[in-house]
Length: 262
Ligand SMILES: *[C@@H]1O[C@H](CO)[C@@H](O)[C@H](O)[C@H]1NC(C)=O
Ligand SMILES: *[C@@H]1O[C@H](CO)[C@@H](O)[C@H](O)[C@H]1NC(C)=O
Image 1: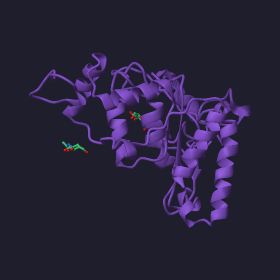
Image 2: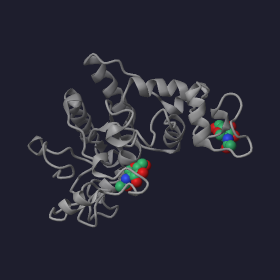
Image 3: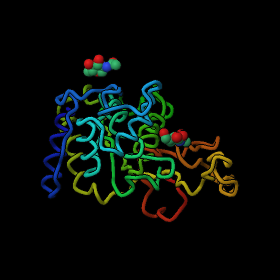
Image 4: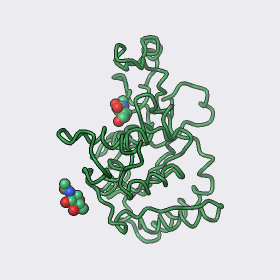
Protein backbone atom coordinates (compact mmCIF):
# COMPACT_ATOMS: atom_id res chain seq x y z
CA UNK A 1 0.00 0.00 0.00
CA UNK A 2 2.84 2.41 0.82
CA UNK A 3 4.28 1.70 -2.61
CA UNK A 4 0.91 2.65 -4.14
CA UNK A 5 0.96 5.85 -2.07
CA UNK A 6 4.45 6.64 -3.33
CA UNK A 7 3.62 5.86 -6.96
CA UNK A 8 0.57 8.08 -6.80
CA UNK A 9 2.41 11.11 -5.37
CA UNK A 10 5.18 10.63 -7.92
CA UNK A 11 2.72 10.60 -10.81
CA UNK A 12 0.53 13.39 -9.47
CA UNK A 13 3.35 15.83 -8.72
CA UNK A 14 5.00 15.07 -12.03
CA UNK A 15 1.67 15.83 -13.73
CA UNK A 16 1.69 19.18 -11.90
CA UNK A 17 5.05 19.89 -13.50
CA UNK A 18 7.32 19.14 -10.55
CA UNK A 19 10.49 17.12 -10.77
CA UNK A 20 10.21 14.26 -8.29
CA UNK A 21 13.18 12.54 -6.66
CA UNK A 22 12.57 9.37 -4.65
CA UNK A 23 14.99 7.94 -2.12
CA UNK A 24 14.10 4.27 -1.67
CA UNK A 25 16.39 3.61 1.28
CA UNK A 26 15.98 -0.16 1.22
CA UNK A 27 16.67 -0.40 -2.50
CA UNK A 28 19.72 1.84 -1.97
CA UNK A 29 20.80 -0.35 0.96
CA UNK A 30 21.29 2.92 2.82
CA UNK A 31 23.49 2.48 5.87
CA UNK A 32 21.63 3.42 9.06
CA UNK A 33 24.48 3.60 11.57
CA UNK A 34 26.45 6.80 12.16
CA UNK A 35 30.15 5.93 12.20
CA UNK A 36 33.62 7.27 11.41
CA UNK A 37 33.07 5.91 7.89
CA UNK A 38 30.86 8.97 7.32
CA UNK A 39 33.98 11.12 7.26
CA UNK A 40 36.52 11.03 4.47
CA UNK A 41 40.11 11.67 5.54
CA UNK A 42 41.58 12.33 8.96
CA UNK A 43 39.59 12.98 12.11
CA UNK A 44 40.11 16.23 14.00
CA UNK A 45 40.36 14.39 17.28
CA UNK A 46 41.10 10.68 16.79
CA UNK A 47 41.39 10.04 20.55
CA UNK A 48 37.86 11.25 21.38
CA UNK A 49 35.43 10.67 18.51
CA UNK A 50 32.59 13.21 18.61
CA UNK A 51 30.25 12.46 15.73
CA UNK A 52 28.51 15.87 15.69
CA UNK A 53 31.72 17.91 15.70
CA UNK A 54 33.54 15.69 13.24
CA UNK A 55 30.72 15.56 10.73
CA UNK A 56 30.16 19.31 10.97
CA UNK A 57 33.82 19.91 10.06
CA UNK A 58 33.62 17.27 7.33
CA UNK A 59 30.49 18.92 5.96
CA UNK A 60 32.19 22.35 5.87
CA UNK A 61 35.18 20.87 4.08
CA UNK A 62 33.18 18.66 1.69
CA UNK A 63 34.53 15.49 3.33
CA UNK A 64 31.30 13.66 4.15
CA UNK A 65 30.80 10.23 2.61
CA UNK A 66 29.30 10.14 -0.88
CA UNK A 67 25.96 8.62 0.14
CA UNK A 68 25.39 11.44 2.67
CA UNK A 69 26.37 14.12 0.17
CA UNK A 70 24.00 12.69 -2.42
CA UNK A 71 21.07 12.80 0.01
CA UNK A 72 21.99 16.30 1.20
CA UNK A 73 21.81 17.53 -2.37
CA UNK A 74 18.27 16.15 -2.53
CA UNK A 75 17.31 17.87 0.74
CA UNK A 76 18.60 21.17 -0.57
CA UNK A 77 16.70 20.75 -3.78
CA UNK A 78 13.49 19.40 -2.38
CA UNK A 79 11.38 18.99 0.67
CA UNK A 80 11.11 15.30 1.39
CA UNK A 81 8.26 13.26 2.55
CA UNK A 82 8.75 10.55 5.05
CA UNK A 83 6.76 7.37 5.23
CA UNK A 84 7.55 6.56 8.79
CA UNK A 85 10.70 5.93 10.70
CA UNK A 86 11.92 2.38 10.66
CA UNK A 87 15.61 2.14 11.63
CA UNK A 88 16.80 2.88 8.13
CA UNK A 89 14.86 6.19 8.05
CA UNK A 90 16.13 7.19 11.48
CA UNK A 91 19.63 6.38 10.24
CA UNK A 92 18.98 8.66 7.29
CA UNK A 93 18.09 11.50 9.69
CA UNK A 94 21.07 10.79 11.94
CA UNK A 95 23.50 10.81 9.04
CA UNK A 96 22.07 13.26 6.48
CA UNK A 97 20.83 16.06 8.75
CA UNK A 98 24.37 17.06 9.70
CA UNK A 99 24.95 19.90 12.17
CA UNK A 100 25.79 23.01 10.14
CA UNK A 101 24.09 21.62 7.03
CA UNK A 102 20.64 21.20 8.57
CA UNK A 103 20.70 23.14 11.85
CA UNK A 104 22.73 25.22 14.25
CA UNK A 105 21.97 26.91 17.54
CA UNK A 106 21.55 30.23 15.72
CA UNK A 107 19.42 28.77 12.96
CA UNK A 108 16.58 26.64 14.19
CA UNK A 109 12.81 26.32 14.11
CA UNK A 110 11.13 29.23 12.26
CA UNK A 111 14.58 30.73 11.62
CA UNK A 112 15.95 27.35 10.55
CA UNK A 113 18.05 26.59 7.53
CA UNK A 114 15.20 25.06 5.51
CA UNK A 115 12.57 27.67 6.44
CA UNK A 116 11.63 28.22 2.80
CA UNK A 117 10.93 24.54 2.24
CA UNK A 118 7.95 22.41 3.08
CA UNK A 119 8.01 18.92 4.48
CA UNK A 120 5.27 16.46 5.20
CA UNK A 121 5.01 13.03 6.75
CA UNK A 122 3.03 10.40 4.92
CA UNK A 123 2.58 7.06 6.62
CA UNK A 124 0.33 4.13 7.34
CA UNK A 125 -0.58 2.87 10.77
CA UNK A 126 -1.35 -0.61 11.99
CA UNK A 127 -3.91 0.84 14.39
CA UNK A 128 -7.26 2.40 13.67
CA UNK A 129 -7.89 6.13 14.06
CA UNK A 130 -9.86 5.77 17.29
CA UNK A 131 -6.95 3.91 18.91
CA UNK A 132 -4.92 7.11 18.47
CA UNK A 133 -7.47 9.48 19.99
CA UNK A 134 -6.63 11.14 23.31
CA UNK A 135 -8.92 8.55 24.93
CA UNK A 136 -7.87 5.67 22.65
CA UNK A 137 -5.59 2.86 23.73
CA UNK A 138 -2.48 4.23 21.97
CA UNK A 139 -3.01 7.78 23.19
CA UNK A 140 -3.00 11.05 21.30
CA UNK A 141 -1.41 10.84 17.82
CA UNK A 142 -0.37 14.49 18.23
CA UNK A 143 2.08 13.43 20.92
CA UNK A 144 3.49 10.60 18.81
CA UNK A 145 4.14 13.05 15.98
CA UNK A 146 5.71 15.79 18.08
CA UNK A 147 9.33 14.53 18.15
CA UNK A 148 9.40 13.97 14.40
CA UNK A 149 7.55 17.08 13.37
CA UNK A 150 8.94 19.50 15.95
CA UNK A 151 12.17 17.81 16.91
CA UNK A 152 13.38 16.96 13.42
CA UNK A 153 11.53 18.69 10.59
CA UNK A 154 10.61 22.03 12.14
CA UNK A 155 13.87 22.12 14.09
CA UNK A 156 15.66 22.26 10.73
CA UNK A 157 13.28 25.05 9.70
CA UNK A 158 10.89 23.13 7.43
CA UNK A 159 7.32 24.38 7.23
CA UNK A 160 5.54 21.19 8.18
CA UNK A 161 2.33 20.39 6.34
CA UNK A 162 -0.37 18.34 8.04
CA UNK A 163 0.65 14.69 7.89
CA UNK A 164 -1.04 12.29 5.49
CA UNK A 165 -2.16 9.43 7.68
CA UNK A 166 -3.58 6.23 6.24
CA UNK A 167 -5.25 4.56 9.18
CA UNK A 168 -4.90 0.81 9.33
CA UNK A 169 -5.02 -0.03 5.61
CA UNK A 170 -4.13 -3.64 6.43
CA UNK A 171 -7.49 -4.04 8.17
CA UNK A 172 -9.60 -2.36 5.47
CA UNK A 173 -11.34 -3.89 2.47
CA UNK A 174 -9.71 -3.13 -0.88
CA UNK A 175 -12.49 -0.67 -1.75
CA UNK A 176 -11.63 1.42 1.31
CA UNK A 177 -7.95 1.43 0.39
CA UNK A 178 -8.91 2.65 -3.08
CA UNK A 179 -10.89 5.45 -1.45
CA UNK A 180 -7.85 6.34 0.64
CA UNK A 181 -5.78 6.68 -2.52
CA UNK A 182 -8.51 8.79 -4.13
CA UNK A 183 -8.41 11.12 -1.12
CA UNK A 184 -4.61 11.32 -1.37
CA UNK A 185 -4.83 12.20 -5.07
CA UNK A 186 -7.39 14.93 -4.32
CA UNK A 187 -5.24 16.38 -1.54
CA UNK A 188 -2.12 16.43 -3.72
CA UNK A 189 -3.85 18.72 -6.20
CA UNK A 190 -3.89 21.52 -3.64
CA UNK A 191 -0.91 20.45 -1.57
CA UNK A 192 1.39 23.39 -2.15
CA UNK A 193 -1.33 25.90 -1.30
CA UNK A 194 -1.86 24.33 2.13
CA UNK A 195 -0.99 26.27 5.25
CA UNK A 196 1.61 24.62 7.48
CA UNK A 197 1.05 23.47 11.06
CA UNK A 198 1.71 25.95 13.84
CA UNK A 199 4.73 25.73 16.08
CA UNK A 200 5.94 28.18 18.72
CA UNK A 201 8.13 30.79 17.00
CA UNK A 202 11.61 31.35 18.48
CA UNK A 203 10.65 34.94 19.24
CA UNK A 204 8.47 33.74 22.14
CA UNK A 205 11.60 32.52 23.94
CA UNK A 206 14.59 34.14 25.57
CA UNK A 207 17.25 32.65 23.31
CA UNK A 208 20.20 32.89 25.65
CA UNK A 209 21.91 30.54 28.08
CA UNK A 210 21.25 33.01 30.96
CA UNK A 211 17.60 33.04 29.95
CA UNK A 212 17.63 29.25 29.76
CA UNK A 213 15.91 29.35 26.32
CA UNK A 214 12.65 29.67 28.26
CA UNK A 215 9.36 31.25 27.25
CA UNK A 216 9.59 35.02 27.85
CA UNK A 217 7.72 36.01 31.06
CA UNK A 218 5.34 38.38 29.25
CA UNK A 219 4.36 35.62 26.82
CA UNK A 220 3.78 33.20 29.67
CA UNK A 221 1.64 35.80 31.44
CA UNK A 222 -0.37 36.45 28.31
CA UNK A 223 -1.03 32.71 27.91
CA UNK A 224 -2.43 32.43 31.45
CA UNK A 225 -5.92 33.42 30.27
CA UNK A 226 -5.87 31.04 27.26
CA UNK A 227 -7.63 27.69 27.50
CA UNK A 228 -4.85 25.71 25.80
CA UNK A 229 -1.08 25.47 25.75
CA UNK A 230 0.83 26.84 22.76
CA UNK A 231 1.66 23.57 21.00
CA UNK A 232 1.65 19.87 21.85
CA UNK A 233 5.12 20.23 23.39
CA UNK A 234 4.77 23.72 24.86
CA UNK A 235 1.63 22.81 26.76
CA UNK A 236 2.48 24.91 29.86
CA UNK A 237 0.56 22.42 31.97
CA UNK A 238 -2.69 23.29 30.17
CA UNK A 239 -4.80 21.03 27.96
CA UNK A 240 -3.06 20.38 24.63
CA UNK A 241 -4.32 22.49 21.74
CA UNK A 242 -6.54 19.94 19.94
CA UNK A 243 -4.97 18.32 16.87
CA UNK A 244 -2.05 20.77 16.90
CA UNK A 245 0.12 18.27 15.04
CA UNK A 246 -2.37 16.99 12.51
CA UNK A 247 -4.29 20.06 11.31
CA UNK A 248 -3.27 23.55 10.20
CA UNK A 249 -5.32 26.35 11.79
CA UNK A 250 -8.29 27.52 9.69
CA UNK A 251 -7.67 30.67 7.63
CA UNK A 252 -9.85 32.76 9.98
CA UNK A 253 -7.29 32.23 12.75
CA UNK A 254 -4.39 33.18 10.57
CA UNK A 255 -3.55 36.34 12.47
CA UNK A 256 -4.03 34.87 15.90
CA UNK A 257 -1.44 33.49 18.22
CA UNK A 258 0.15 30.17 17.35
CA UNK A 259 -1.42 27.16 18.93
CA UNK A 260 -5.04 28.24 18.68
CA UNK A 261 -5.74 25.56 16.09
CA UNK A 262 -8.98 23.71 16.37
C1 LIG B 1 27.35 -0.20 10.14
O1 LIG B 1 26.58 -0.79 9.12
C2 LIG B 1 27.33 -1.44 8.12
C3 LIG B 1 26.42 -1.89 7.00
O2 LIG B 1 25.07 -1.92 7.35
C4 LIG B 1 28.10 -2.60 8.73
O3 LIG B 1 28.91 -3.23 7.74
C5 LIG B 1 29.02 -2.03 9.83
O4 LIG B 1 29.68 -3.10 10.48
C6 LIG B 1 28.21 -1.24 10.83
N1 LIG B 1 29.13 -0.60 11.75
C7 LIG B 1 28.98 -0.64 13.07
C8 LIG B 1 30.02 0.08 13.86
O5 LIG B 1 28.07 -1.24 13.59
C1 LIG C 1 11.46 20.48 19.79
O1 LIG C 1 12.60 19.85 19.19
C2 LIG C 1 13.86 20.36 19.60
C3 LIG C 1 14.94 19.75 18.77
O2 LIG C 1 15.05 18.37 18.92
C4 LIG C 1 14.06 20.14 21.08
O3 LIG C 1 15.31 20.72 21.49
C5 LIG C 1 12.93 20.82 21.82
O4 LIG C 1 13.05 20.52 23.20
C6 LIG C 1 11.58 20.34 21.29
N1 LIG C 1 10.58 21.12 21.96
C7 LIG C 1 9.77 20.60 22.86
C8 LIG C 1 8.88 21.60 23.54
O5 LIG C 1 9.75 19.42 23.12
